Image (cartoon, rainbow, N blue to C red; front, side):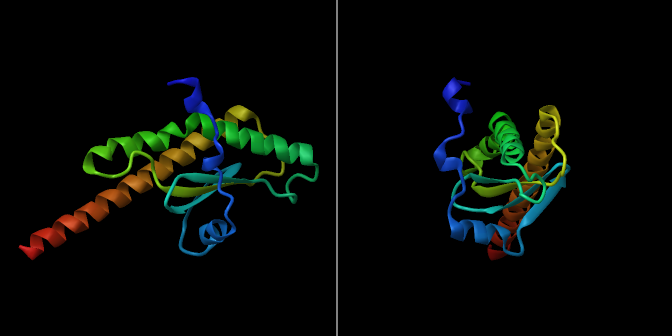
Amino acid sequence: MSPSGNTYPKHERLCSRKAIEALFAGGNRAFSAFPLRVVYRHAPELQILVSVSKRHFKHAVDRNRAKRQIREAWRLNRDILRASATSDAAEGTPALPSIHLAFIWLSDEPQPSDLVHRKMKNLLHRIQEDLCSANSSSSLSVSTSDSSAR
């Protein structure tokens, strides 16, 4: 993969107030893997939000470090989601998953970066499994409705 493929571009950042409110509205999926929690929903494009509360870290330098760890873990491991989307691309789905993700820091203590990376991988694999099971169940319901129409 080229070095430009490992960037965190502006268009991947979730900034819209309406999109953020919709993400945290009820009915969206969430998983936790301490020290991270992820909330996600289907959306027009892949975007992420990183949140570290002032309640957990009083000093901005500590909050910024935690956010930097989350962004770096995302940047290095986002291909987990892209791989599942490209395997479905032959069936006509888009090459990139179209979801909004919010990563929320849960710990009151600073955590080592390797732990954050492992937990990020764990969460992304769980999201991938959930998206794949949702896609297979929706394609299953479409195929049963097609067969009943005949």
